[in-house]
Length: 256
Image 1 (tube, rainbow, N blue to C red):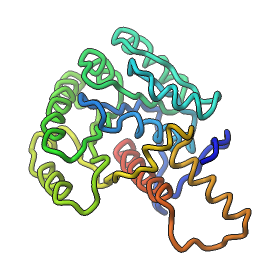
Image 2 (cartoon, one colour):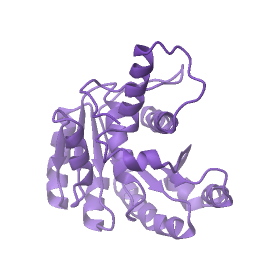
Image 3 (cartoon, rainbow, N blue to C red):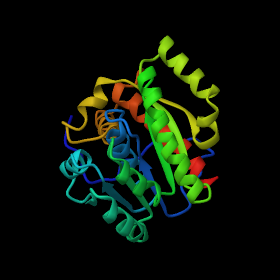
Image 4 (cartoon, one colour):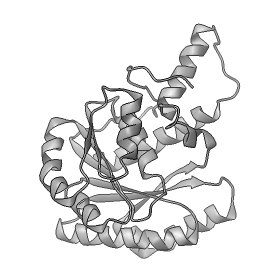
């Protein structure tokens, strides 16, 4: 994979899709580490850039997302805010500077997570399909519930299954369990989109790119070679389409 250019990545959209219509802070948050917050947040930054200016806040002490994005392009604006006090003070200021602000939250840092929940407009919760992940997800939902009680229903909250194995009983049972969980449905909206496990997604940080950028590079390469019709999409393009569908769903909740 080639290093991405500075051109904003474009993504396929549904015909009736309405772009985001308001300034908003979108947090990717879970109390469990390793569920895909950073990967999803980085792709969200690329996707929302189609519609306006995007600020990115890395609230994880590991700084994985800010290092990744800085390696893609020096033009990508990233702020590192690793403590609750700074987040409480600065997130409203960052929101005024950009059309959209993406926050990559840390795992297992309750004080920081609570600060983010007190300032974001919508929280996106990635979850994997194992029972351990579902049990751990309850802790995150409880934090969201407290924030919503304090803030009169905000932040809006959605969840989706990430790194799922397609066609497995585990995925089917996880979807069924979510549908039957009253606490989830009362406080968090389960999205239809599932992001499936793909090795190519694990590779993109090391290649200094994202699925959106790499897919765009492939499309340009085909056009340059005169390829007019593609019989089969590559894995990275399928992943790109899944992310686009996910962010369109999130945007529908934002606009609703």
